[in-house]
Length: 200
Figure 1 (cartoon, rainbow, N blue to C red):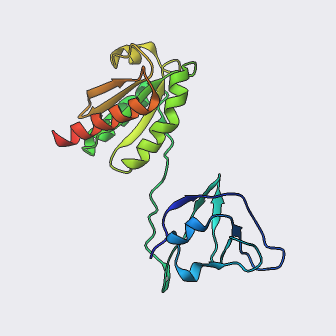
Figure 2: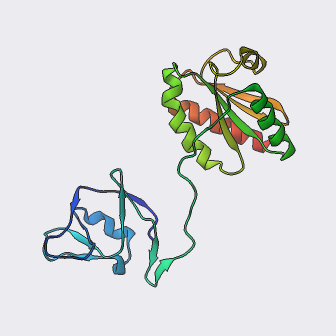
């Protein structure tokens, strides 16, 4: 069995009786995700498990950085990013360059038009960064602060509300989503917009 899931865990502590780097976890449900060689029941603490492999805890989630099988470590790990920061476009000349490069490479790109004062933009941005990871590397995601670029560029792109998420291909705007509602709904619409482009 391979271990590749992220598992929610309860607080853990080091065993005072063991000097090795092992953890006791109060969650017997995790045993289904690990091979027998990666864990065993603890005798010193009731209803706990001792992990005998290196495990990393990140923000309340248990994320295995190495896959294990009965035979040992598995080499081909999924190294896909979980989130990708939106690349900032800060001038009209940079915008033109990004659009021209995408056309030359025959790629689509997503441009998120936002403003620093826009609360909906602030809530939406991290969710779009996760979406960007789903489409990495075939679609690049960029963001533009409408207050940091010439107004002429904002007018040229037809931006009237924030946030606006546009899909560009062949130096032309193909579609857009205006994010006036809940962030998860906007993300779904953006995903649908991208998928529609690829099925056309």
